[in-house]
Length: 125
Image (cartoon, rainbow, N blue to C red):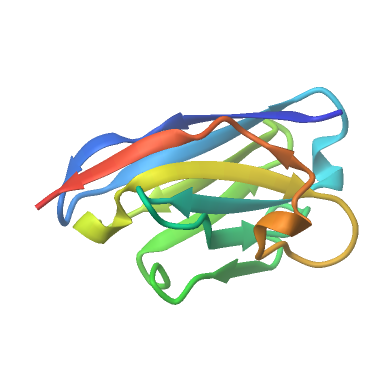
């Protein structure tokens, strides 16, 4: 069974950048498509970005982050990264990486089988 651990984030000024990492251990990482979700206080967890099993595989982004965030993966290092640029206060949330096996990218919470513990990103105006 693959386990996921997020790192990165912290406090960033609006317009700035940060990079989140999701490190996998155990199991076969390339069996999993990986999705980043986020959850702001008082709101539901929402889809941010997803990547298919391969390096340079298919990706998808929420409209709110398209053009600002980039998801990538390195299967040799068992990591998925989320580069976040042009950050806005509304990007403030706890960010989670999650994985699913089977076909297709996961865009909803219920589709994901494994989850990390989350990492906080706070964007100050």
